[in-house]
View 1 (cartoon, one colour):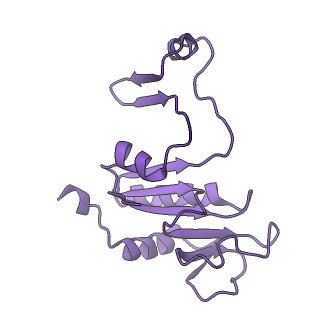
View 2 (tube, rainbow, N blue to C red; view 1 turned 180 degrees about the horizontal axis):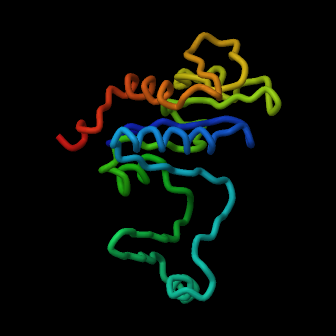
View 3 (cartoon, rainbow, N blue to C red; view 1 turned 180 degrees about the vertical axis):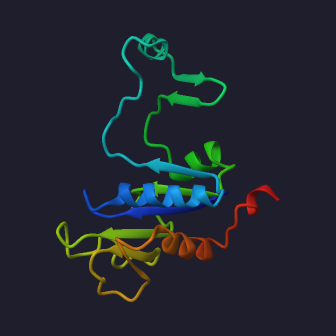
Length: 174
């Protein structure tokens, strides 16, 4: 998979704290002036159009793609015959981002951080994955990779990520 941006996938069991970690990492990265994107992988269908809005009417009329554009935001709703590959999403829509944090995609060969909370599971989902670069949890995992406690300051985890990605905010704008 060829990616033009720096991507890290945050993985773990349901309710382990993946979203909480991503929010903390986004805030820290933004405080350091990085352009950050997030991708939420879902195994379910989802709806982002609001009933009665023009874009909803366009979708219901049969449009294959709907773009809602304003001075500060652009939204694209596109019908697909199947799930788009992560590399297509990144390379089509997110090429100007410094760091992309994806929630999920545990089976893809991309760098991963696993969130592990002992009350949810004692086992790592990606224990044997060579792309697992760190664990964030409430109890140190049994494998020998970098570990961060869930209560650690997000700056420690971001420092680790940036050293792995060899990134600074100016890299993509130089």
